Length: 426
Image (cartoon, rainbow, N blue to C red; front, top):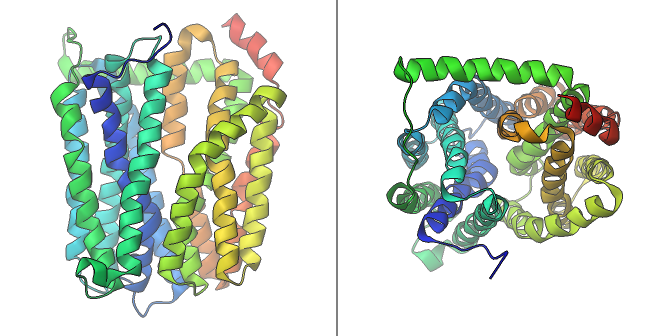
């Protein structure tokens, strides 16, 4: 039937990697690591200092990948080694995630290093995962196959997180002594899940063979860096693209920080970990269908307006979070974030598509994806530092208004029609 997306073995195997590694993003990065980092590995430490350490670990991991991204992207573009590099980075993430189970109480430095390495493995593997998309889907199927991976990521991450939250709330059901043992057990569970569902991709996704230029990988890296420099020159010529990318980096940094630091913030205010994890689970399952509904706002009124609405909602949420006092507030915030989290991401992608030259979409989307994947550099350390300096977690959460408001101010000056005209001239 015309228009149908055939799900063959290679396509499903590729998409299952999103099902595999999203458990790290949900159970570890957003959920259990902030809980254990605060209550176990930083036991006896001032909450604001623990949050600062968590923010520094997140920012350091993001900066590491940001520095490595051009070289990794060049290797991916050179072709022929994507699966091997994906396996290597995923192996790094899987091993260090599982090793968190072994870190002793109070050893926050070891926990931070292992977590940082796991985050590098997670993000690095994603670079090569994205690069493999063109090997499993032609131009007419690429959007649907990409969406399949996105959907399976929400489902897989949410499914294992639901099990892990149940373990924390009812440890006796699983033969565990208490909630702390349940949290520790979640780390090797994520590692096993991640490893198990990576196997289909490694077995069934085939890369097209390419002829390597003389000089091998070294020349490929040099060529990739030259391409990155050329993209920078094009972005400078297309001022509306440059303006949007600056805005995107600012507000998506705020979005990423909320995802990574929300649980840590709730702990500082004295909320119970099981309630915080349940709220995270609510956000996970509200986010996907809400993104579809939010997309209709973009269709009717334009993506820029939708983005500004989402930023406004995030700003309201931050003020709400600074004033909240009970668990009902936290659940309300979780639902509200879920309503806009997927929407701001999808509308950002569609606005960007309207601003770039059609014939250079691959080059420009590589740049866009690099910014999106390696956000959460400024926000975590800003939030951690402000909280440590003021001694108030409520002030620290308000510091995230800075990237959101700056991003809104810049995206307001992105003229979609003028951007299209400039893109056509390149």
